[in-house]
Length: 406
Image (cartoon, rainbow, N blue to C red; front, side):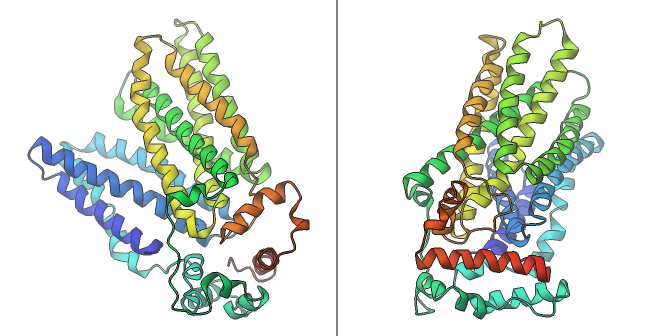
């Protein structure tokens, strides 16, 4: 259905279900409406992230994508503030839901992403969007879709078929396991999603239970995420996605081990260690969204990020029960998070680096990421690989010489 339609649908659902929750008068209705609200809210975050990622070029993609997480942290702080100022829960609910209304009214003005239009074979619409981008960026000679197709030596026609009316292949979650290399990538990235969510909420629940005002504690949880995302951006730009993800996963495992060694009467040290653990896992969790989007092609990008978000929700469901295991052994939550984070860090070594690489459109291009890391792509002589290399060159030239993020 495209990115824009789903954004409009989920944002409208957020507004309608958010207002409806305030007018539920029995427990069953409350639970049902809250379930629907949580469902559309989770989908909304995923599709917004994919939309932003596909519209931003290589040069600014890291910082732009991480701003989505930064505003998520700001949203946590706003929730704490509105909760503190609201006299009753239903006023709080309506106040937060109204913030979605401006986007619901203006979402139809947003264009569809050229990446998605190209994969659907809608070249004329993609050309119109690119021309609009060129006008906004004051580019006199925008990229032409016809030139792109001619450079690829018929690659586009082979993917979409000679007939423009030919049906486009629909993808499902099984495509994330289409071969052994993609399956390893999917399993590893799913484990990273699970680890990030589990560690994020285990440290968050521990932080909220520090005592004092629950509103202030929730506000501080949002505050501590902001510098984490800044560090994540700097690391991703200087070191790369994988080389930033691995150290912070391993450091969160080390911090869990340190927490287990601190005596229980050293409360300040325990608080500092927990905040450090949340900082480390926050960096890893934040960059997972962008890294996943870059590891998979356009035809399955939303599917990959969405399935990762689904595994992420599984981690958030398990987190409270993991915290409850402290009644069995006080350090059981830290032990579980530490072991899983250490395993995730080791498995991430198998993933390819995507820093400075254009977004891929097809599975062949996505598979080339591994070969590029191993410097084996020079031996590829097939037409498809030549066409993919041409696409990469075109995007790089358009960004360097024209300033247009295609």
